[in-house]
Amino acid sequence: MSELLATVEAAFEDSYGHAPHHVVRAPGRVNLMGDHTDYNQGLVLPCALQYHTMVAVSPRNDSHCEVVALDCGGERDRFACEQAIPFHSAQSWSNYVRGIIETLRRHDYPLPGCNLLIHGDIPQESGLSSSAALEVGVLLAVAVTGGFSIDRVAGARICQSAENDFVGCACGIMDQLVCLCAEVDSALAIDCRSLQYRAVKLPTDFRVVIIETGVRRALVAGEYNLRRQQCEQAASELGVGSLRDVSLVSFEQTQRHLNDVIARRARHVLEENQRVLDMVSAFDQGDSLAVGHLMFQSHESLSRLYEVSTPEVDTLVALLGEALGGHGGARMTGGGFGGCVVTLIPENRCSVLNEVMTRYRDMTGLCATALPAEPSAAAGLLY
Ligand code: GLA
Image (tube, rainbow, N blue to C red; front, side, top):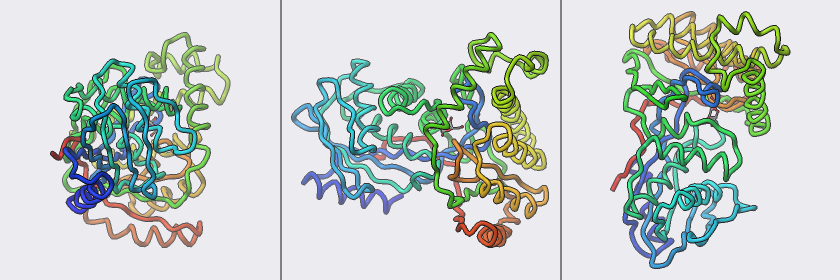
């Protein structure tokens, strides 16, 4: 982290000719259980990571915003903050920054002019939520410069709204909320209907390891938005506002009214919510066998019922299943269609990973990379 900070400070000085007044860090996340449930007002269990996006900031004398994105070849953006901020048609990263500032403007926050510089070490396009970290980082940097504070849950809503209404991705609130509310050494059990959450301590003898599958994420936005529509259709045909209002018992009685695809999507969501509750109990009781079992069940459901996995990701999870032999678990994580697999492995079995990755390469031709994950604290001001 200190190396990242030194790079940010030096680059800020180079870009603007003075040191930043403040630096914010915002973590990436990995989700341990509960995927495609958040936009159905359901339950999720993510944790924040030790990989961060840093945002350095200083005030300006005018009401403009200037931004440098170090990880995008030093690209710049500049726009006026006092009138409606337009969508940037050429630089996709700019729209996360513009979206946050425009959403704050629409909510009448007192916007300062500011110089910003962004740099981080969250692997991009891997499904570890570098975009939510960017949103949260910009939000906190603008707030400290403007001299206003934002409640963390309200902040997550602002970030989600920027992504839904400005960037154009119909994501749920999990990523932004865990980035703003996570606790060290813990996962965060979030109820995405009430937005209440609680930290759940992770077993100390287990490691969270993320495996980048080497499958490039494709079709993500279109397929993601389609899944969301299918869930809304299921809720509407079952006569409820969201799938959270359907119990598994009543679903068994009424699902024959749904077509096969819609019924499978809904079943995944309902059972996945239950798995989050079961996983929290398993953590609380230190039942590591149950933890592993739930993770493999979740993967099967995401692959077969929700259809957001890929054959290569399925292969990796199956190899992990064989190698772990009931001690620990693995599942795809996040939106899907490539990206990462998350594993919970007993400390003394981490050595199986190398052999699994070699077999994965032999079977798929893809090179997987293991990233150790340390469940970390929420976003905050470094100074
Ligand atoms: C993406 C979205 C989240 C969530 C996950 C799937 O990461 O940003 O809101 O829906 O997919 O669980």
